[in-house]
Image (cartoon, rainbow, N blue to C red; front, side):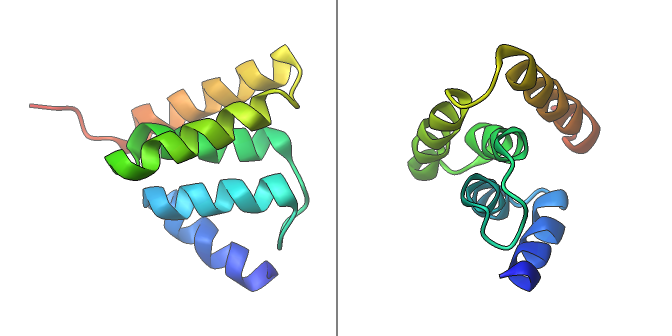
Length: 94
């Protein structure tokens, strides 16, 4: 599980929304990584903003489920991390 999570992390860091969603789920459940609701929210928030139309709502629903387990401060920090990641890793529209 740890090796699988590491490969998903690499793909997620390269911007693959499916990998971001799976990595978020891994952090939510603690599969292959230390359980972290903040990290789960971060990756699921990215997936919810970048996933295909059919998977976007699934990522958003799971992100919102995770949000209920975070303090407002941790949720804000995860959102800020996601916004920073998007600004650094998404090309602007021409």
